[in-house]
Each structure stands twice: as structure tokens, then as C-alpha cells.
Image 1 (cartoon, rainbow, N blue to C red):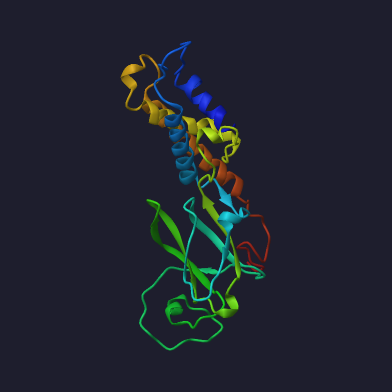
Image 2: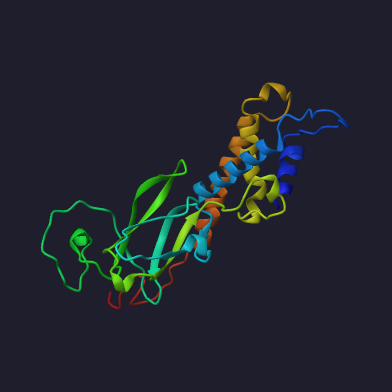
Length: 252
């Protein structure tokens, strides 16, 4: 559905907020701007709760360029989780770890990488990353992507390919009515239940026998449960009987 179709469905079919006036000020309960704001909140909430929008291809969200001597990189505010990171040309993902406060110690140059020694590693090629520190960006918490060790001169300009989870990056204004929703089509109507809840929760007294706001909230929660079940079903892999692997041995 386009944003315009979502707006029409919310106003006319769900909220029954129609006006038959030919002239004069509108008698509609909500403006288009209000309802578009509720639709944005609904889609963003659905995306966060279900982690539905996994992205590995959009350059704006999934491409990061390292700079010599720069440890922290601010992710776009639409990104709320980083699944993995792989430098361009590498065969393996970087190791994920967390930021730790460690005492100074001798540098271990063994082949085994110990994340606890990240604070003492000399600048060099990237070995790992962490995202457990957040910063406020435009009034919102934004993911802070930290790389270690500190990039050296040889790593300056190195492209790191990310897999992220994000909310929709599209607009929600009257100028965006013709664009398609980024969420899967199966959930376009479901997210409108939360938008209806937002719209009606303070106005139930004016709606007579229409479903109360709480009904829309419950329908939205039910949709999230179904979406999570769909994702688990999609990602589930049945373990086959294969001796020597998958937990089975050659012996008895």
C-alpha cells in the first residue's frame, strides 16, 4: 500500500472520519498531518518490536568507511541494531564484543584475539566492533558503532559492509503519499491498528458504538505476535540425521 492508501484506509475505513461538507471548515476529527504522524509511529513501533526490516544492501545504512584514528562512528538514527560487520574483501565477519575497562598490560601478539586486550592493541587492521554505547542524536538515541583496534593509515578509507536492523527510512508527509511502505505487504493493515489507537485513545467519548481504542491496541499486539511467529518459522531449519555432524557421532 502507498502512504496515501494507508491514510485513506485509516481515516475512512477504520476511524469512520468522513465529511460530507461541500464548503466551509472541515468537521473531520483529525488532520492529515496528525494521522500521518500516527502512521509513522505505528510503522516504527512495529519495525522495532518485530525486528522486521533487516538490511544488508542500502548504502546509507549498510556502508561504513573507516578513517585513520577514528574509533566511533554514528549510525543513521533509523538503525537500532547491527547484526554483523565485514570489511570489504574479507572472508569473515568482525568479532562482536563489548566495551570493557581494562588495566594496562603487555600487548599479546598471538594468533588468538582476546577482546579483553582491545584497549592495549596498537592501531591496525580491524579485528572487532562493539555497539553497547549510545549517543543522543537529534533527540533520539542512536547506535554508536565502535571499531578496534584504532584504524591505522593502511585502514583509512576501508569499506565495512554491515547487516543492520532498522525502522523505515521513508518520509511521512503529504509529499510522500505516493511512495510504498517499506514493511512487508502482509502487515500494512495491521500497523494501522496502532495508528487508530493513537487517534482514538483520547476521543472514545465521541465515537458512540465504535470499537474503543483498547481494541485497536490489542489487535496491534496480536499482529506483532503473528509477525514474530512468521519470522521464527521462516528462519527455522530442521536438523537432519547426519552422522558425524549436527550433534551426531560416528560411534554409539
